[in-house]
Length: 78
Image (cartoon, rainbow, N blue to C red; front, side, top):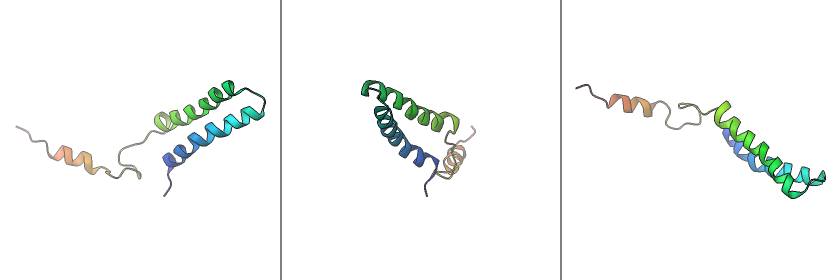
């Protein structure tokens, strides 16, 4: 099943290449088009990392909560 982060990983190169082409067809030079298109790619990465951050135990996390429970159960009080 495709989740949010899979879509973001696909949109990063698509937006980079697509916006570069759009800016080139709009008449901008390649040395201006690439940095402008990279702003959109960086915005996607920023959104995926900081705005909609992955959370442990989410559907895409294979470990789930068992990784933290196991670590907590191995701690002994002396």
